[in-house]
Each structure stands twice: as C-alpha cells, then as structure tokens.
Image (cartoon, rainbow, N blue to C red):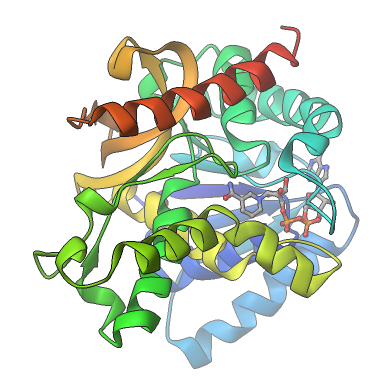
Length: 309
Ligand SMILES: NC(=O)c1ccc[n+]([C@@H]2O[C@H](COP(=O)([O-])OP(=O)(O)OC[C@H]3O[C@@H](n4cnc5c(N)ncnc54)[C@H](O)[C@@H]3O)[C@@H](O)[C@H]2O)c1
C-alpha cells in the first residue's frame, strides 16, 4: 500500500512545526509547499537530515508546486499572514481570503479525496471558505483551534494546581476568537470537577487568559503569532485521522443544525477518525453557556458575511 501522504501548505512557523511533528510521528511522508523559493526545500531538507538523530523514517519534501502533493490523504493549510501586535484575527481576512482561495483550488485539483485541516486565520471563516471552494463534504473539511485553545486552558490549570497537564480534561466551544467559550463545568482533573478544586474567581481568571491566549503570545513575540502549540495541535488532528483513532477533540466543523446553528463553521467536540469529522457531539448547556455560544456564533457569522461569497 505504501505510506500515506500528508501535505502541509505554508512552510512558515506553523507549517514547519506541523511538518516536523508529523514526520517524527511516522504517520506518513510529508510534502511542504510555499511560494518563497528555497524555504520549503531548505526546511524540508534540514528536517530530513534530523531523521537519523531523531530516529524516524518519514520522507520530507519541500516544493514550490502542487505536483508532489498529488493524492494526499491529509492536507494541512497553514498558508496566510499571521497577526502582529495590535491586530485581531479578523484583520487578516482580506489577505488570507485570497491566499486560501488560490491554495484550496490547487490542493483539490491534485488531491480530490483528501481531508483538509485548515489553520489560517480567521480560522472559522477560512474553514468555511475552504469548505465552499473545495466542494468537499463537511466531514472532510475542518479547522484547528479547539485543541490549541483547550491546551492553553489545560496549561494554565496545571500551573495553578501544580498537577500534570496529562490529567486535565476540558472542552471549549465556539469560534477561535476572544469570544470562545471555555466550559469549566466540563473541566476535570482525573475526573474531579475543577469547580471543586479552584475558587470561581481563579477559574474566571484562567478562562480570560485562555480567551486571550493567542494575543498574549503575539504581544511577547512582536513579529508574529504562536506556532509550537498550534503546530502540535494540528499534528494531533493529522494523527487522529491517519490512525483512525476516533478521538473526541474540539475542532472547527460545519454545522447543520447542531447547537441550533447552521451554515457556519464553529468549534465543537467531534469524533476524529479516518473519515475526518465522523460525528459532531452536542453537549447539554446551561442558559448562560448557551448565551455565550450565541455571542461567539454571532461574531463568526459576521466574519463569514465579510467573505461576501
Ligand atoms: N488556527 C489557529 O489556532 C492558528 C494558530 C496560529 C496561527 N494561525 C494562523 O496560521 C497562519 C500561518 O501562521 P504562521 O505563524 O505559520 O505564519 P508565517 O508567516 O510564519 O507563515 C506563513 C507562510 O505562508 C506562506 N504563504 C503565503 N501565501 C502562500 C501561498 N499562496 N501558497 C503557499 N504558501 C503561502 C508564506 O510564504 C509563509 O511562509 C496565519 O494565518 C496565522 O494567523 C492559526
């Protein structure tokens, strides 16, 4: 059968991090594409030369074109501009719309059966754009945001409680913006509700820090946005698909009535396996949580409308 192929579009900070991660995971061979001559080839060769030390056999190829991407099982789209201090994710919309339209067309023509994992921001809107432009069914187009946002929340809880990040479980709903909806009620440390472990004000502070977690990194880096945690999160999605793991993870998916929402790409818990988004899981929510979800959905709808499709 040979190895599966993973293509990563954009060899910038996130693209290179995803490529390196999935190569080390040995879930397939990787093709990395960028428009800057030498960048995907150089980073790809450098990663390949790390294989003897890292002890992995995945092949990595850098390219300026799409021929090498043909018949990819999974394509991760990271091409697009990133935030600088003072910018919101929405400020990237016009520039990234053009990039995503051109990239998705080329990806689809070479890999009509691929599963697309979108990363470029504004995330929910770019996922929606990719879904519409690809013509793919909704199970094969998804966005990476929730795994990153929950990872941030878990990291902050772990620092606060001095417990292992591995024992923290949580869910975040909503768009990948400052109005995302972390759910303390669905957050546990090895099954123990966090509501029993931390005072309400502390939880609220960690929730706020999570919502603004992307901005915190942007203001520290000054020249761009986060990429280690985003790269790790996207790689986890690739692994869940290629190993058919049936993981339950928060991802951006197209909704058709779930959570009372339709014609929107939005962060929800899904079952991720060989067929991509195999199931969308609906959580029971309180009136307050529903209100927060609806505020987040309004801002995503506004952003999708700005695409003027
Ligand atoms: N979803 C998330 O949670 C999340 C997290 C971090 C970053 N992001 C987003 O991911 C995107 C990439 O971030 P980054 O830090 O890697 O940026 P970056 O600037 O380091 O890399 C982007 C790369 O895309 C390339 N590119 C631009 N147009 C292209 C095209 N038409 N075809 C192929 N490649 C093209 C650029 O040359 C560049 O190398 C940004 O939009 C950023 O906002 C999303």
